[in-house]
Image 1 (cartoon, rainbow, N blue to C red):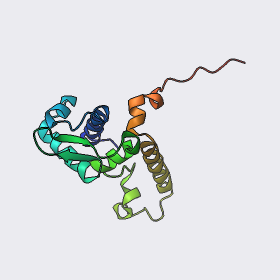
Image 2 (tube, one colour):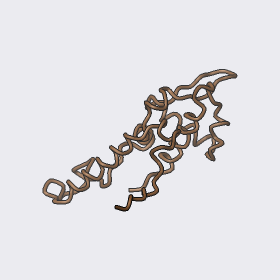
Image 3 (cartoon, one colour):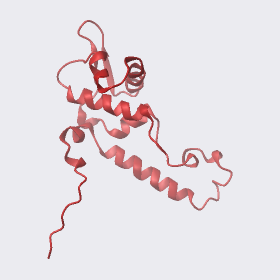
Length: 145
């Protein structure tokens, strides 16, 4: 399983919009400063709008903005809107993809891993990303007793 550019760039765009929350709608050209072509970005933002995560404002001062506050939007919401649900194996979402899925002894492992990944993605909000609290992945030094 590998996240495509849709999910990655969708998250970049949403993080940019979260940084600009309260500053009004952001023009497509400004959002494209994340390093994505405007054409591709329009497609991503359309998916995010369809997912209820972004709204558009028309006119000279128009652009894109978050449809909800940063604490109400999770990384999982963004990935779902751009990629669809993540599954570690095709049999998790479609039993007919494998003739052994009905009696497969490993399918439950793939379900567990998929559920775990999706639960983590749903637990991280744009607010968390803005605050960077949850992303200090350095191991804590344990106190020596």
